[in-house]
Image 1: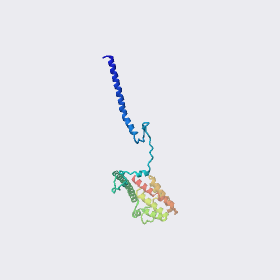
Image 2: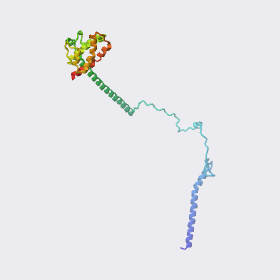
Image 3: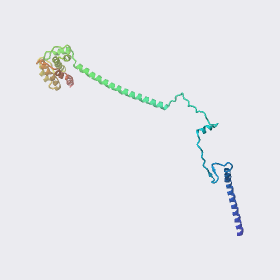
Length: 269
């Protein structure tokens, strides 16, 4: 193949390609032109600008309620919405019921705890009171002597004293309450001597003096001091015929519990 024939073939191919390109461009432009013709046709489109081949802005006036009321559609629902039905059944929340039940259980539990603690306190107080009452009864039994027993020992006192209607301690209390402090201290001192004799701290006998009884208590200083505190007012009243004030008698009477305590303590030893 000569070069001339090759050059001719290339020219033919170039011409064919150019013809195909022009045909393709015309084919692509044809729909666009058709659309332009349709948009700019009869009546036109108000939103299309043919000169610039672009969209045109359209000013739309706002709608009024009057316009809306005139535009009724047959598929538009004009009925009023139905009111929600009131349910006659009460819906209980099981979670709320469970919480309430748990709170009730907690309240009952704490009430039981408080009741138990209160009952234990009551038992402790009751046991304490009973123990104190038993101790008081035992103490009273130790020092509550009958008139017959007192009468037998009164004969051994180092002085003469009228027999009481009951026991010596009750007589001393009655005289004290009546304001007869002279007689009250005489019966109180007599009671102390007889009590010491009954518990074998001293030995009552006719002819003994009060100082001898104090010497018998030299190894028991607490009992000696308790007896000596009552002995001096007794001697002032009985032998010196002096008056005794209420305060002076109460100073002796208020030591009676301590006297009983020392008597029992020495007996235990």
